[in-house]
Image 1 (cartoon, rainbow, N blue to C red):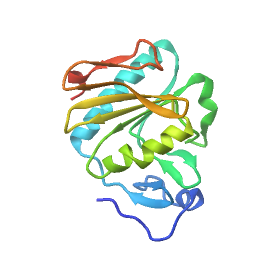
Image 2 (cartoon, one colour):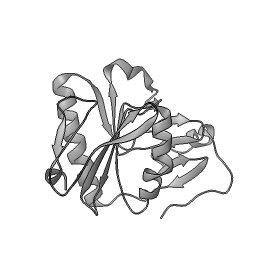
Image 3 (cartoon, rainbow, N blue to C red):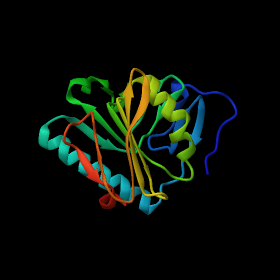
Amino acid sequence: MLTQTSEKKTYRDYDELPEGAPYQLISGDLVMNPSPNFFHQRIVMRLSNSLFMFVEQHKLGEVVPSPVDVYLKDTEVYQPDVVFISKERLGIINEGRIKGAPDLIIEILSPSTGYYDLTHKRNVYESSGVKEYWIADPDEETIEVLENVNGEFIRIVRQKQTGIVTSKLLMGFSVKVEDIF
């Protein structure tokens, strides 16, 4: 269950939390995330491994699974499930944190964070310049890929249970939905 504090917080407050504290800063609220379940983490591992192998093979940049802090605004610091940063933009990695929009973000929906992933965080990712946003839904066994076109996410593909989803950002990268779930 997510818990929120009553007063609005900023990155300065967030930065004072102990390392590994299970919080995200969403709209100025410190939101506690419970540990993800086994199936969630298995999906994170499968997607991050596939993406990592592709990125490494083509020497395109860095792929990191959560938890890693992604600072987008003074009141918005998230820990996306998987992030990709192109080699041209590795300068946004600062003191072990990412300060700026990663090129690609993958979120796996869960009961505790799904609402934020689909609404507020999606809007912030969109306005911050995340180029591609993947949303995996374990309950529906779907993967949706969104591309940022002129500051607005447009659906590229959505597959349920079977089929292939392909990145437009990373030409040649795709996954079979049935291999993820």
